Length: 446
Image 1 (tube, helix red, strand yellow):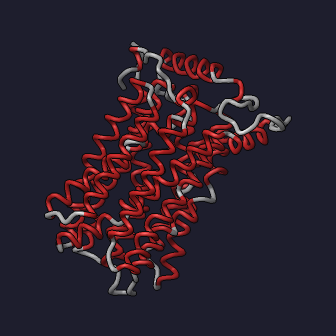
Image 2: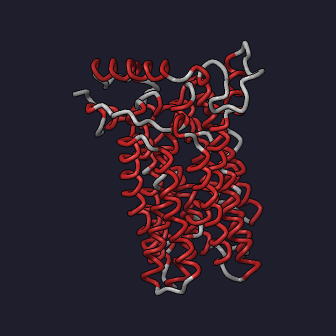
């Protein structure tokens, strides 16, 4: 039986770290409905405040991914953690709409490089047979953050100003940066707590997986997944890596899937508290607690979907099917008038559907590309795909202003999710992204 301390050391520290990042990103959804007393914001201005984060989010994606490979994922995340904490506190000190948008832009800038850097870190600790589960367990920080922080934000808003909520919630990353520095190592060879048996198993398995990848994933390009193999070889492997990532048809499809998925994802999640407030007419505390309910089911769905994906090797279905379920819930919830209890159930269905694909989706790039290229590819996918994080909230806000109802916006979001599901199922090649091999017994369960 191979020791599995990596699950107890690497994952929990990374979960808390990104839970704090996700809190600072999404607390604005709970706070914005209560910000109007200081400076009134239209629905489109609120959508811009939520979405402008993702414009800044673009900038450091690829640089941070490359730094994580060439320098250190651990150090890259540490520096970004300190910077985003400062930007989060600034959100509570703004005096007008322009300053709020600027502070959110800076927050996105500094948080932008964390996601790809941590994915690179996990790829150095967990073999392919464990990758979807490792990704999903780390990404449980997303629903956990909503489960814990939505009620907390609502409770804080009932007892203090929205400014103090921003400031207080922006400080914890500064404390967790100390834990991150001492608890995390870039790779097994650098960790003091790992056993010799576990270290040897990881180094041997990861090396064998890298060597087993198709030649085009490491050295050049051919017609298996790439637009063209001609003219893409380059004596500088770093430049070749950039060009391989940009020319790989599967990477371009993953960018498309992620963009349309994230448009629906953030359009839904960042507007969820506003929908709950309208649905219930309750206090900030009630809105916070009810907003957390869908994420409890989303958390269970993420872990279950990742286990199924690792067991079967079927990444396409693990991405496409949950998105179809989310589409059904989104359309039923917005095109039919339901009692409040049924609306909440449908919100739970949508939340579960849009969260479930995370682990399987992010296991795909490291399967089809070598480590040098996958850093660039993950940065590209996350950077360009997260433009949907700007489009979704702003689109819902703008359509709400134009039509007087959020229904049209949510129907459009369902269409975006449908495109994502179609691209995942019909576009991605099973021979490249799926692995039907049996999972070794020693790695089947974390």
